[in-house]
Figure 1 (cartoon, rainbow, N blue to C red):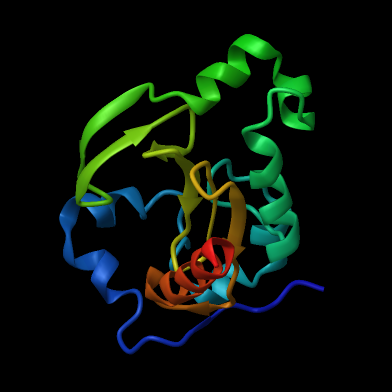
Figure 2: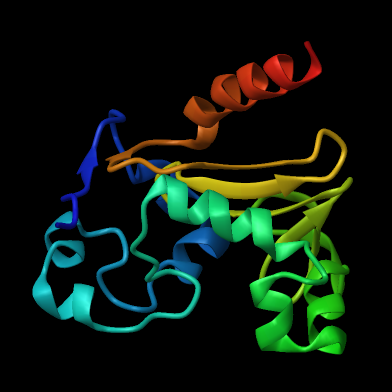
Length: 161
C-alpha cells in the first residue's frame, strides 16, 4: 500500500513557487506539486529519475547505510570507479534551488562527511561518516525539512552518549 500525500503546512507548496528558478525546476514533469496528480495510478506507475522514489524509512536508511561501503551491494553493482565518483563531489557552487552553496556528487549532496538527498515535502535520507550512522525521515505530510532536524539531533545525541 502506498500512502496518499497530503499538505500539512499552510500554503504548501507556495514557498516553492515564489522563486522563479525553483518554480521552473518543478514544472517538469507536469503535476509534481499537484496532490491529485501524485496520487494517480499513472504517476505511480511512471519512472521519474530523482523524483519518483516510493519507499519506506527503513529501506531508505538501509540504502544510505550501504551507499558508502566499498564492499556494499551498491558498490558491487556500480563497480569501484563509478562508486568512488558517487561519493565524491563532482559539482560545487551556489545552487539556486537549494538557495545556498552546495557540493553534488552524481545525484546526491555530499558535504562534510555526509551524503544524502532531500525531497520536496520534507522527506530525506543520508549517511553521516563522523558519527557513522544512516538515517531517513519519510513522511506523507508535505511541509518543509524542519521536522527531520530534531529527529536527527536526537539520534546524534543518543549516539554520542
